[in-house]
Length: 76
Image 1 (spheres, helix red, strand yellow):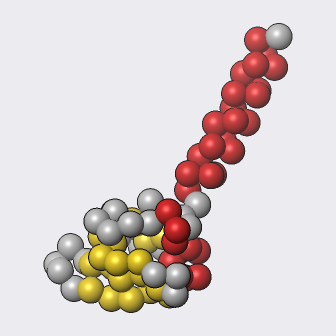
Image 2 (image 1 turned 135 degrees about the horizontal axis):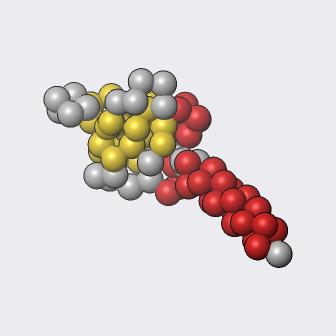
Image 3 (image 1 turned 90 degrees about the vertical axis):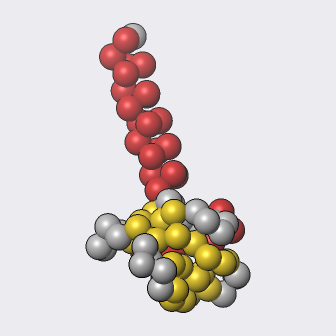
């Protein structure tokens, strides 16, 4: 019985982690910190629209990422 509970808990934690890793533009708001998956760099969200997301580097430079790229390439 305990083995089955451990197995269920592990599966639940794995699914929860995958859900938390998904970034959806509708879940993003200004001042939120996001991490670029490929580089590990951390950025601050400046503004969000259905079409794109404006991000700020730690140095203060801003750039635009389209929503599809943002959802695939960034983690909260």
